Length: 281
Ligand SMILES: O=C(O)CCC(=O)C(=O)O
Image (cartoon, rainbow, N blue to C red):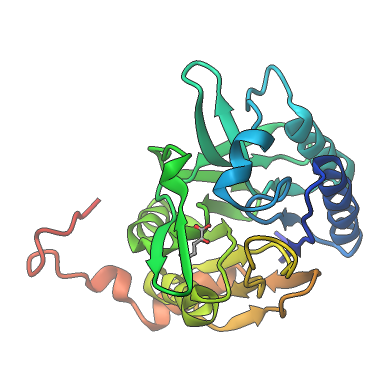
C-alpha cells in the first residue's frame, strides 16, 4: 500500500452557510489535486462556532435524505475521490428535537461511512477569559466512532473529546492506526493544551493523531486557535500551521506504528494486575 497523504483544511468560516460549503469544496479539491487521500475539515465548518448558532444552522443527518451540507460533503468526496472527514455540523435529531455536534465521514464514492456525535460537551469556565457551555444547547453522543480505509482504521472524535484519553486508547486497542479530531480550540486553551494533547494521545497509544481547526476570524464571537496539526506515533509534529487559512499536509508512513511498538513495547508490558480498576478490553 502506498504512503498515505493526509490533508487538514484549516478553513475560513463565515456566517453564510452556502459560502462556507463552496469554500470547503474548493479547498477539498485543492488538497486532492495535491495528492491527498484523506482530507479533514474543521469542527463547525458550515457555521460560526457558538451556542447561539447551533439551532439556526442545524440539519438532519440521514443518508436516505441528504441535507444541504451532507449532500455537499458527499459530492466533495466523490468529486475529489478522497476519504473526507467532514468536520462537524450542528445536527438536528427530528424525532426528539435534540441538537448534536456531529462529524460525518465519506468514502471516495460519496457514501457516508461513519457518523460521530461529540461525546464530551465543551463546558468550561476560565474566569476573565472564556466561558463556554455547549450543554446549554447540545446533547452528547453516546458512542465511539471509527472508519476503515485501505491504509488502516482511524478513530474519529471532536475537539473536547481529545481531552479524554480513553477515547484514543479504546480506538488504538480496537486496531486504529490514528485518531482524527475536527476541533476548534481557542486563544486561551489552544496555546496551553492543543499540541500537548495531540502529542500525548499519540505517545500513549503509539498512533498518528491529527486535529483540524477553523482559521482564526478576529471578527467572530469565538476566536479559534487554528494550528491544525499532524503528529506521528513517536509523538513528533509532522505538519502544522499558524492561525490563518491554510492546508496542512502530512505523508504518513504507517509502518511507524509497528516500528515504535517494537522499539518501546508498552502495549505488551501493561500490568493490569497492578491496576485492576483499569479495563483490559
Ligand atoms: O478543550 C478545549 O480547550 C477546547 C474545546 C473546544 O473548543 C470544543 O470542544 O469545541
